[in-house]
Image 1 (cartoon, rainbow, N blue to C red):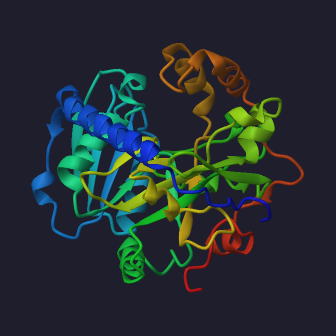
Image 2 (image 1 turned 30 degrees about the horizontal axis):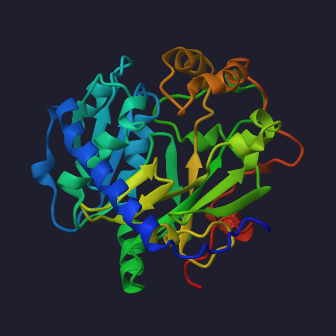
Length: 346
């Protein structure tokens, strides 16, 4: 894929570095305060061992996805999940509480007011993630990378450490069905890729943002269908979901950007030189149609949620996202061949 690699920004001056240090301290302080919003429902963190890869998740009403999500990351070598349930009403909390490898916290506090859950997960990473490889993902994200069929996350992180690399970036790739969104059938426990089997191979574009030097990757199906008139408002598609964590680190905006800013160089986008993967985004299961109406009312997503009412309205109409340039999803080798992620043996 051409045109998505971003050039590096000049290093920020001392004033910018000073303000970024203050920003990071404020975020760490927010995380400390946010612990008071969390109630431990099932704390099994005593089972965490040195060297364990830990998964951190904030969710609400994801009961349909959770069986496959948990099994997927278990197979990849995650022995423990630290989950914040934000007031689920669909049985998600009960399902999670029954899992022997899940520690579960509950909160009814506002998702948007917590920096979209970042304050909650930041506290858990600060408390439990220091010195561990920490995977921070949403319940609709499946991380893949070159060689995933034969090498789990333990092998991947060993490779990264051998190269003295402290994190692993990924582009978020939306998967979708062919046909109206409400006409697919999905059963809990099913691989969502069985029904979401198409994607946009491009175009994507990337730039670096001052002063943190974080990537800004945009494009793909959501821009094509929902933000064609305002492409600058389309979703950010770059993330750094896997990091060898230090309690002084802080995510700034979802997992799109990190402080200290030097960590943002861990991902340079499709076509870049750094080891990277892809987060398969399974947002477009049929439940998205009913959920969109609910989320429009809740106004808990986006910094200015009223500006995105049209997005929820469009999703509620169950559009067909497929077009003649859509690619049928075939696996990790295909994404390497398309340049969406690199081979790791090169």
